[in-house]
Length: 220
Image (cartoon, rainbow, N blue to C red; front, side, top):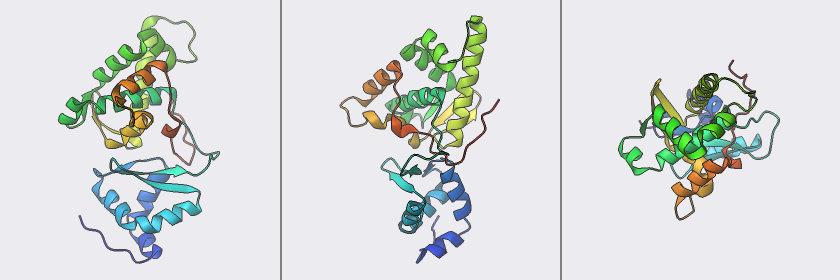
């Protein structure tokens, strides 16, 4: 879909797409080419939006993998980092996206594959501990159920931020923005192996913050 050529910032701000795209970006959403209208708007308006967001201490970033997102120029009180579960799930999904077979499948994966990958890389006991950091010793079945809920909560967050599409309770579709979780290892000779080691050691890349600029209440 073609978009108008903007001659000044006022034209951009008056476009009916601006309010919803602006709000989404400020809430940490990653806008990729699959959201064609929004992506085209950002492409056409980029020269005017970059200085606008800089005035508010934000950088409108266009990733080489084909998506836009906002990054704060400095730490702010409203900025929230991803939870441990969201980081682990995001990194594991990024690892799956680096697999050529996932790309050939159109980015489609099953939630069961994700859980199996996490267990194989982290270990079941460490994974349960990571997903239930405040746990006291409980029945194993209770811990596993709590872990499943944490994974589901993480998937909902990643879906909201444009990293994935939750197709149904058992199926996911991975999107290009997931590669932010692999940014620290992309330049290595074997990025997939490096990311595997990073997940296994429980390391988090500081660039994988949740760039949401307004606090959000946690789901109960």
